[in-house]
Length: 91
Image (cartoon, rainbow, N blue to C red; front, side, top):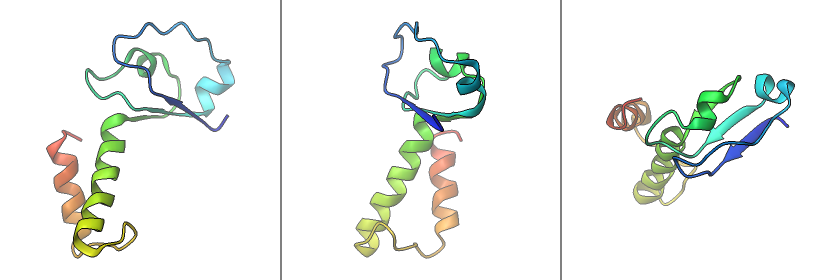
């Protein structure tokens, strides 16, 4: 696969085995964000996107809807808004 999505709660025992080529190639979207890294993220050999990253992207879409009524409508000075969101969650 190109991507693996994990919705395991934090503290869940990870006894799933992935092929080495999956670990090195596929991106892991791990929706967990506290504590970080999760057990699965710690074992992953490739790129990992944390739940905090997902949280920020979802928040940006929600602000776009609130301000402009459309999740695709770019905000005025969106880069500043996004930087503030990332800073708020420590990214």
